[in-house]
Image 1 (tube, helix red, strand yellow):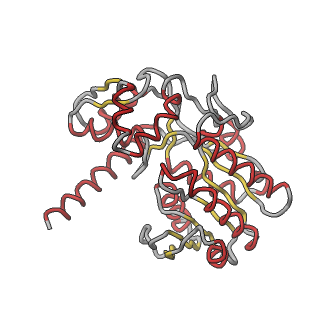
Image 2 (cartoon, helix red, strand yellow; image 1 turned 90 degrees about the horizontal axis):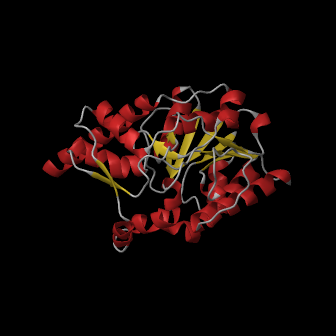
Length: 317
């Protein structure tokens, strides 16, 4: 039976490992502390993915490697390149096809729906990190050292996803508070379900005609922050959403104490105007359709409430 290596047990890594294992595949899930979902088809292993030699050993004999891990958001420039090169080394030594999880940062600012043929013109530090890693990865593919592709999505929805929707909108809406979001509340925005990222990762790995390029994840029609908040409140059975644009000075102040807030400032352009991803290529090539956004929001809410209930139980103990 083929062996699949999933690196990282965040929302995408977890969804990918579970989808593979549920389909009867053999999965080895690598995380720093051996964490991840409990499933008989998943072997969880504690590993340092930046250790190229150790990672290569774990990937030996694999048919596919899915790179879903990333460093802390504010540590990308310092830590992501080493992780990426260790993964490339492991893919080369194992001869497994490598599919990485990317995003839209490398394109920089764009107008109109962005497709995969948009050139990399990053205008942020994290965008440059993403663009440089993809360039190195693609060069290794074109040199015949590895077989690879990248899957890119927009801001995530789904169980345990981390995005403006899940960190700024969801907690406020469920508690009846006003949500403050550093965004044009009425600009259309693409939201991507983490389960759809997992589906595309697996489909790309299995199709040699899909290698050597990037693919955008089939995503639901864009919704503005305001429209998403209204739909989120409806799905959650909560009071009507109250949303207000966060003043720039408030975001700067938050950045003095919260590293993630500080990092958001260079990417604020993504929410100041329409931010729409064209995923037609993947929809046509793989015959994949996006999960309806109501379903993604329902799964997001259920996971959030479940985690909150578990944390409450732990506190009572």
